[in-house]
Length: 99
Image (tube, rainbow, N blue to C red; front, side):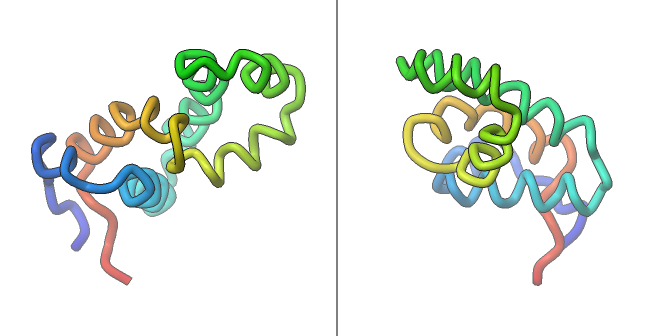
């Protein structure tokens, strides 16, 4: 279901992990490196926003840890902090193609 637009209300009802996976998949389909880069850059701030300051500081200085965080950015408090980013992206660009 490519280019299927979903409203923010509909997207808000999805689990965070599903939002993350859909946004990342859609960005890959669109070859949207900017969104993927913006997501990587948002992870340390999101970690700090949920009170994980040590994690945020570690991520800012250890780029490889960001790649691991990127894979798990749809889980837990970090995923919740990034939800608005996923909803915004999917509202603008639609849901990914069905497998």
